[in-house]
Amino acid sequence: MQIEIQKPERNYRWVVEYQNGKTFSKGEVEFKKVLEADQRGEVKRFALLPLVPGLKELVVNLDQNKRLIYFERTIGNTGNEFRPFLVYLLGWQETIKGVNSKVIMYVYPNGNIEINNDEATLIDAYIIKEKQNGL
Amino acid sequence: MPPLGGTIYSERQDNYIPATIIIKGCIGASAGTEATITATMFRANDSVELDKNNPITITAATTTYSYEKWIRWYCSVAPDTQCTNFKFWGANAIPDTGLTLYVGTTDTGVTPIVTESTLAATRQDTNYYSLATALAVSGTLTSETDETDYVVAQLRVTDAATQGDMTQQTYNYSFDEN
Image (cartoon, rainbow over all chains, first blue to last red; front, top):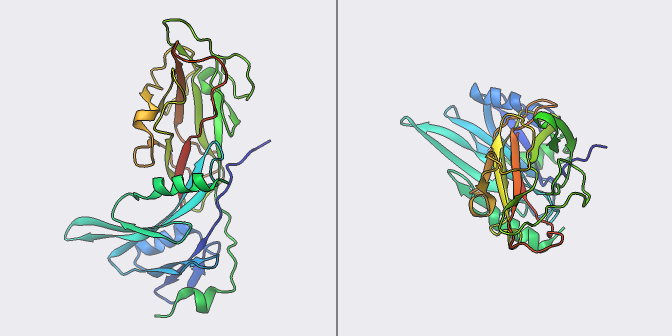
């Protein structure tokens, strides 16, 4: 029998809009195709749309110089002390005067957003809260 | 600029199937026998079973070692692009008096041992106790059957430990998918 890691709930889905006006959502186009199009400067904007009430739409507007950053980070545990959850990483990379620059929004399940140019700092605190809440 | 969601996508469903990632326990020669696990037992045999056979014996004035536990992440349903940036960490405290977990990573399967591990050689509770300090596990999973490197863990037991079952410990992991 195959036992999967418990999947976290999904609170957002992404949507991409290309410069030619075409739009696709997650499941309609592979994300690797979005990245390829972004490398060609063809992505106009990329959005996270809420799947649950109370959350807000998040949009990143891109241009020829900005490259999309998007990941869904699964945080889980072996002892089921808390329900696995997703943190959405949404932002862009840009080279400014030869210097690599990143801006990343870390979007937590409750809709809180941490903006950073490197690693998130609040995920450990969020895990502690989730442990207190239990499964 | 109008919002993307309200006008265009409000009726669409999230029909995307994310990757399925499984944790495998690896035993036997070259850690080559893999089985799906959700937990592991530190004890004195090389097994993925969750029974209480072969407990670790506390020996006076000596450190005793569990069998190394080898685990890795396995992709059973492929992601759109990749699953990467795997990390592993636990609490910032030892499991109990006389009990200390040591961990490490390797890309090469080696038969688990019950003597002091050279692979699981770093204390978990003082080194890998948060996402910020987590043990990084190499591996980018793009296709079915892809696997990460191994995490090797070993429990060291001194004679300060007390007899009986250790309380269940929780260890955290994370990975990024897109």
